[in-house]
Amino acid sequence: MLTKTKKNKTIGEHRTHPTDTGSPEVQIALLSKKIEELAAHLAKNKKDLHSRRGLLTMVADRQRHMNYLQAKSPERFNTVMKKLNLKKRA
Image (cartoon, rainbow, N blue to C red; front, side, top):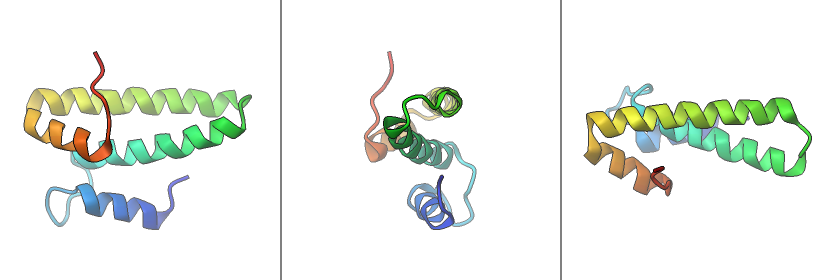
């Protein structure tokens, strides 16, 4: 689970203006952090199928945000991809 300090730090690194908490960049970054933490949990708990379903939902949600950002602003999309070390899906 993402703690409040980790969440605020992630928002601070990816926001586009001082009061930004909901831009696609921030949402993609937050989902990426949650996905990383949940993937680490699932590495230890292989039979936790409920969390696995949540992980798949988060990955799909992040992909939708990435598709939206790529369609609206390819420059911002590329910046986010480089910052988060994500690869573009085919």
